[in-house]
Length: 95
Image (cartoon, rainbow, N blue to C red; front, side):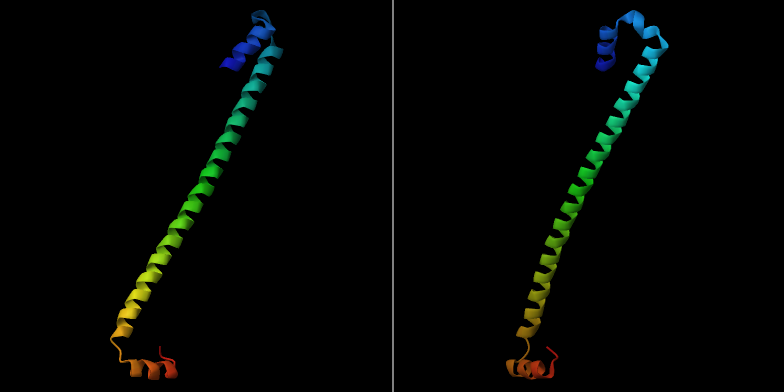
């Protein structure tokens, strides 16, 4: 760890054997671990948001394709019905 080596150089090797120095190094390690956990959590949250946005775009694209296919099939069925009968069925509310 570069940070611990830097602290050793600043304080001097003989001072790192004291309890105070060991406690300080322990606190530094805990702070580094806490920061790494926070960074990992932020990255996971960002990835989750990106995945949700991608899923939303996929669902929207699929619904557009489904609607287009449904309209096409409906138009094919309507083309086989006599126009006069279509007008009559529209008046009855069946089309």
